[in-house]
Length: 233
Image 1 (tube, rainbow, N blue to C red):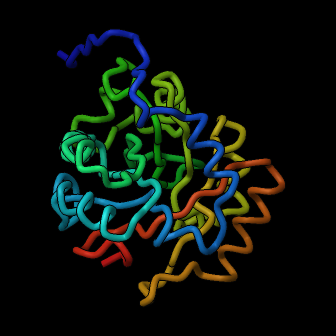
Image 2 (tube, one colour; image 1 turned 30 degrees about the vertical axis):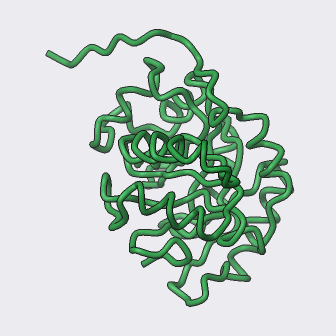
Image 3 (cartoon, rainbow, N blue to C red; image 1 turned 45 degrees about the vertical axis):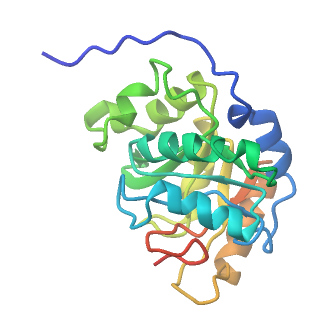
């Protein structure tokens, strides 16, 4: 018998879930926004990363990041720990970064496996909870249409991660994602593990042109899996 989830259909009013602020920030994102000002793609030990959530916050504070999102695969456990840890710094008088909910969900788009990023959603909303159980969705639930709809129903924004990393080109995947209601694309991404982290120029140009054509938000992130927020591994 399939698991039945029941959660209140409410939207969190936490400041970290302010998607209008997130939209305003994404309208300003350029090639220099990551990794020293913002970072919207990173992982902790709660999926396939090496950083403890507290270490993510410690590094974010040291870097004086203005905002970030932990995008572990199919879970928000890392976010929850990081959120509580960040709140413990509220009385220190230190300027704190904004932390949004985030998740990376494996999906199927044009019969191609892609990764869809969700931001600013209410993690307790019934539509998104089945995607936060630690495992990649299967069968119909893996369809990009359902994943995008679930994130939107939970009050979040949807971004196609690293659009030039898949078996089909961004020129095919992005228009299809747009048709399904996607909000943005990860425009600035280092497709090679370069140091210092730098977006790949020709791939960035392709994705940026598509984001302009379809009036999408642009995001950036290091896709950190190692111990340093400033690079991928």
